[in-house]
Image (cartoon, rainbow, N blue to C red):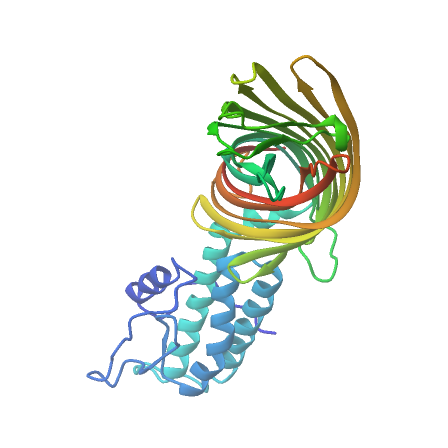
Length: 444
């Protein structure tokens, strides 16, 4: 193999400078077409996507694919693709040098000019690789560690909770859940995590193995007030947690059974621990990482619904507590594209949630001892999350700051049913929401 010569050749320095400029954005697909038709002595054939001009059209055709692959490898700093492309360019230059037939002095030999131009093209590419990617590729070797934390705020739309009932005068037809509370909860969350990237591990052609452990704590609060819950002459029903006689019914008696004011308060807490692992793949300008993992979440919900019935001089209050333990295996993906000091990313995950819940439901009524029922239930549901954001910092930066927006969906929020006949029962319903997150990451 003939070694490329890094020396000044016959190609003009101005042409080399223009060539280097054309490589300043290796991802660019559009390069200005050069027209040398007015001067037949100049090379007439341009390698697409570059400013390299040659006399020999066959050499141009041979260079189209490796030059395109070299520019793509530069855009992603893919060392394997880079070495393959640059070796093919080197081989083409070797063939061009071997084809030089001899001296044509004092005239310029097109074969010598083409070989010199390809040689300059090779070294311009090599310089660009060293400037843009050599350190980045070197930093990929070995193992790197990161630690980070985040703060999130957002709004959750939680399931309706239903209370009280009416019994029609005369027909005795009962309508339950007449006081329905729409829960729009304010949510905040904090997290911290640690991760490791084992870049020397090559699994299915990936760029190593990535693993992470983390903890997330989320809280949400909802409140609502209803006024003048009026049966309009019908009987007011306050179903009891044990069913039957544990509840109360108040006849109208001329409108005395109106609930003049009722207040609802709910507080949710989620404590989640997770572990996950992924395989990052270089896909052109994008880094694509499928991942899988599992999470354990402890969810606690406490709520109260209390009201005043001044016509009868009575107050009532439902107080409920439910604890849900959830095991969630999940799969997902993340995609990242890097620019100069900034990257954009997006992804999603899908989880299978195995839920086991227990708790209690209590009713207090003026002048009567409290009644309370135990709650329990289990369920399997699906959950999901999608996100997109921007990160300020390069992959090798010791500190990075990210801003994200996420959509969350779960189907394991506790809902209590009180039918006045049977004890209170526990079920699950769906909730969704949008949160914004600011995250800081430190690399070691």
